[in-house]
Length: 319
Length: 319
Image (cartoon, each protein chain N blue to C red):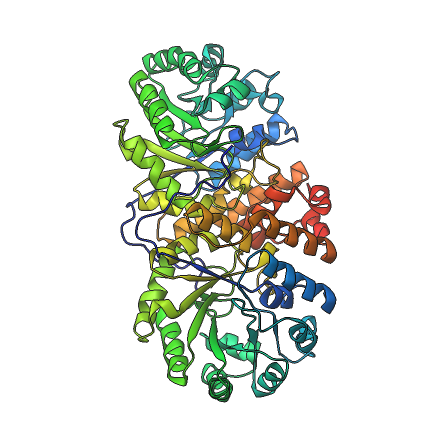
């Protein structure tokens, strides 16, 4: 029998697509359950073993602020950061974080800013401009050290306090980060409210920043089930990098929802269906998410994981 | 604050889109829990109260075969079938079913065939051609009685036994049904394996049948999380009718998955985001699905329902 999904390439899409795995960082930082460092290290190794090539490993954030990732140094130093073809970027919120990341051997870092004033205030304790000022020395030093630098822009589609976000606001932030020398950008729909037409609108606005679409990644949350539809819209707009989280790890603390990041497995199913060769062993990846879910006592929210590995015990109980 | 989703129309999409609600029929027939007729009637009335205009109410199938819908006559006769602007189609598997449907006042019926030989054998106990022959007198008599006739074609994207399905096989079945006089067609991805590029391929093949795209509806299951991405692909191809099931009702008996039909709420979120006016009160609809879920002792699988109404008790327990 043919294996699913059957490959049907679609006209007008990019030639290749990269997956940027954020489960160990963005996923785990938002989960209420604390995962021990040995399990995290094993999780990351297994993800790499499934063929994922870029795995954001952790965040060098204050352990008081994000206890879920207090073990950032221990996790990063345990990985083989020199392995060819693999990248383990880390988030660094400030210079102190950059110091720790560099000491642990990081070769790629990411900074984090907000497209909206209110989220900058609530989440980062500063303003939109203040967050960029905070990022500036981090970016400068990271570039001087020869590190790769990614800029996360959060709340690019909607903000829980401000509501709909003007695409122009996203463009402004991307332009400022580009001036600082940030190489690549991840535009996040942090609360998952955006839909397919908005993806095109945000990207059109970002064109104004003079940043090529080959430098833009999209980062969707599946809170309202729109993430994969938005990926299709992004592909149609020529975007070639998408963030995703194994098993859909990562609750969204701002919405009354059990769902978090776009699940890597659901993304891979789409990409294989579109005829892309991702190099990812999808059944193996689903088993990794299932394994971590069992360790954490929660069922992965990914539809593909549920379909490929069968309902978890606790999912079955829930029906 | 702006309400979400923010409307961003997308270039190249149809001017209007219709939702064909299948929860009371396709959804409930696949659920292991039996729902009493009074609850079903109340469910359908509430769906109409939320603004849904086409609601497939039940199936006049053998009660032995589908005990979930043994109350078809009771449910249909309880509805106000003459209410302007509302349609309550019903599935009729054979002439006996048509007799019962007509006696209960049905004005729109649907017949059901398979795009694959194996599913015809396993599910319908006949061949592909045999299923069409079985449908022929039903279609003839329904048309003679002035009823609207829809043709469901199942397994248009993949078959659990045969694997990938040739788009040409779908086109053949649509052509045969069109010859019989079937007015509209619903092409089903019964096991939810299809992806966006395959949607375009199937529709291109169906063009061969000489049936306009304004007569084609798409029917996706969310088993692998692809349903809404496939809707975006269908809209880009000019399709204007999509089947969906309130709360994502309807498990898929052929896959190891907890997920069923595309959830109407997730579809409505997308459509409102694209600027379509569906007339559906989305928060009210989410509450209806939540209410039915509580009656059935299961949490709706719709992401939008979870996000808008909060996690159900049993969902919370599962985390």
